[in-house]
Image 1 (cartoon, rainbow, N blue to C red):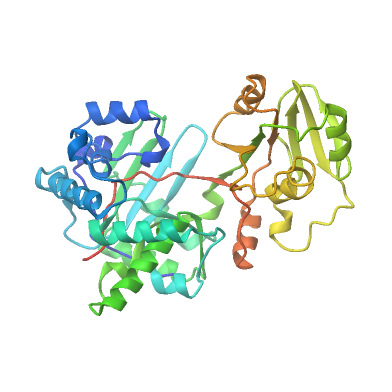
Image 2 (spheres, one colour):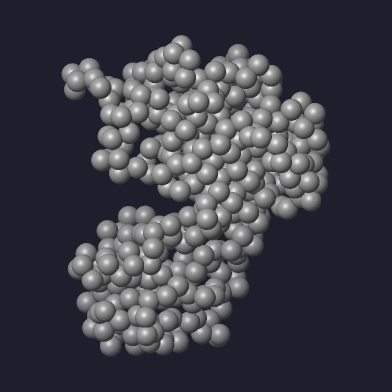
Length: 414
């Protein structure tokens, strides 16, 4: 079974929801970030960047206790000014994010730390201890979490029926953003909360789609509270803010690869070495691969289809069948001399949300010499890797939806 905790969210007033909620700060270009901070006094980014209007002499160092205390102070200021308020009773929050291409519908609630520890919440990505420590310290000082972890689960007809009924009613929030997304949020009634929790009781496990560091840090915070001796089994730190979504509703995109050099190879030498494990076909124009284990390569102003040969064995384990792993094992490492994707300066990544021409432009502009376009990881592959307790290759997946910060804020100490 899967537990989903109802909680009293701190959230924007209805008239300010579209102004408060923001994308993750790291996704904004600096010029856009500056414009938002200059022009919108309500944006949640002011909480994350509380010193924007201060002079340099008063600014604190990033990721320090002093900076986190200013984040907390700005958060308290937002509440005092009435930009944010807290619900009076525990609830679950039904959230839908829609564009002309996709619609993502799921539930915001608390995910169990205990189930994380018991591996009922499964992972596919390794985390960095330094980032875990930083996020844990942040959560402990500011006392709130504003960006949900993205958890996916198997399809549930029982849950679908409940959600279908709820979204027929008027949402609490409905607004559009400049990325052409429509955002809607419903507050479940106590009766609806009970039926949702019952439905989740029939779901055996969840999988982290996005937010491995955030979830690991929340678990570390829970353990810290236990060690400090003031642990309370009823506190919210026994859970962490999450968005639960049926994995059939996810949109998984790839990260494409671009490389600065050909490792000293000529065009013909490159093709010859790649041909050891792949059939190589010229392409008349740029296009996305149409099936697993196909790659499109752009080099010297030419597009090629690389199709993995049938006699190449990729069935050793779940990770060995991931296209990012195949590309590294049979091309990036032996042919281009790139052995560590996390440190090698010869390789960089273009997120799948970017259009295909971004790869081509990078090569044509002379920034890179060669580009590889990948087919997306399938949900089945992601779950297989998680079930084996294995780790995805670096930059394997760009998973949507990307959640908004500040829409439902989780009071950790409550």
